[in-house]
Image (cartoon, rainbow, N blue to C red; front, side, top):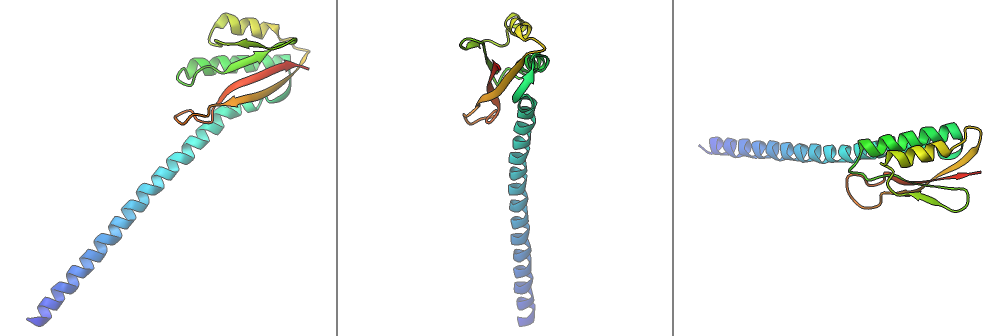
Length: 144
């Protein structure tokens, strides 16, 4: 009878050990998937911003017009993000406050001359926590 009770105690200990190991693996996998989600969101931010970072530096007027088109598309496709502001102007700075307005963007786009050189810089990123943290929110285009 003693051997049977010892066997039951050993079997119970083995089952308890298996349960603890399974629970540890489950928790590890949950933590790993949460980390993968953070990596995915960082990749999304980098992919989104790369569209605009490609234009940083010195560009010609044709590229500036393409940048305006990219900003217009961004503002239409991602209304929750808010508009990307554009600052542009020779003498002083003109801020296009509502860059969704097609007439404002078209007017700005037509002001760029294909042969002129322009300096583009990203001047602001979304800083508040949330879905769009790290996304480009403001760019400056100045004539060289």
